Image 1 (tube, rainbow, N blue to C red):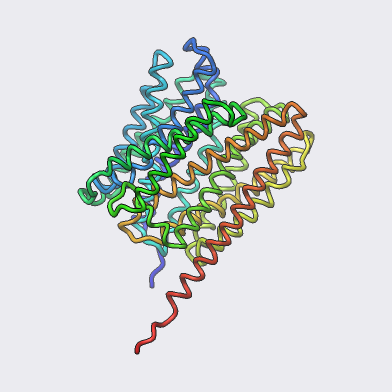
Image 2 (tube, one colour; image 1 turned 60 degrees about the vertical axis):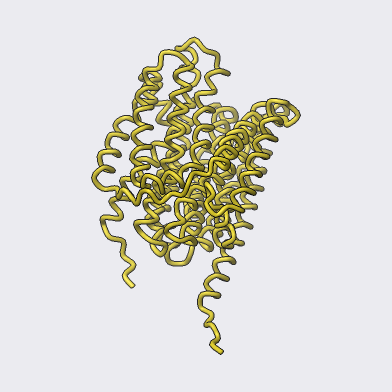
Length: 467
């Protein structure tokens, strides 16, 4: 069997990277400019926080629709339309005259960004097939992992010499290039294959998921669950998601086919991505604060200090893809999560005056570990389903990763905020103990995935007795 990936598939992968990179870059790029934006538009910093929160909540809202829309219009068309909407919204954000308009346009950005990554993953999965998925997905994994890492650096450099609208204008050349190449090379996909839209499921998840994300964000700000602004949306969000899950499990044409969880490999791989979301995106909240609060670094120095994390991921991701295709995502994710734990736990012991070389070495090694921990699990989930099930699989995995990231970020922020009055050094050590605990959960789930894949292979090899 020819295991070589043809150039046209690699070309599609490189084009899809544009969308994945720009959508993930925006999750951290704009955050560094909130103070400047608030001052220029005459708004409070608390109000300006909705520029970031509105984007993330809108991103969560659009995710459940991705699978259905991909079947309705063709997943390649959905990718192109989403990228176009994101690019136009970016340009309009730069010219927003007041905070209300800027938040509304950020919501439009978030809705389109929520469709870009899963739609791109579906395009790649359908183009390459399960046996070669790891190598192709590793290209997209570089963009998804490095985008948030370099966002603070790029944002700080832009604000150092230019005004805040350039935080949005920077997306325009990337968007124009990506859309132009996409029109030429990205396959449009089959259209009209979607069943009738499950409006009940859409309403439930459109209320439940953003409510849940909002509640955990408020939890990180308030540092307590005993607050109406946290508890009420948390209960409503959890109830909505629970009702959505129960409805989707019973229906043949649900908005998202959750019956994919009947496959042990898919179930294990998806849970791994949820834990990986907590350790990846949750820790990305801690590391900038670690440099700024504990080590006294400015925004640009902090961003540059985090580049080693993204560099480690970018270097090792292609190797992780090859190992995934050869040995399976389970064993690669297991070792990747073990290494993530090994490179995270030392931060629970490091003090404020630890030499920069040690810190940078750990960040670089952690970036390498993340490349082996996250992408192989996602590739294993997508390889476990049929081609026609990929839209639901990519949607589900991305939702779980977002929920894991939101929970991890909120939990680590609460731990840090509660401990800071007793000393910054001990506070960060406690927070990194919690990140390490989440990494232990990732290791256990990755072991479950590895065992599930072994069982599936053994069952596939076992001959069926003929009476």
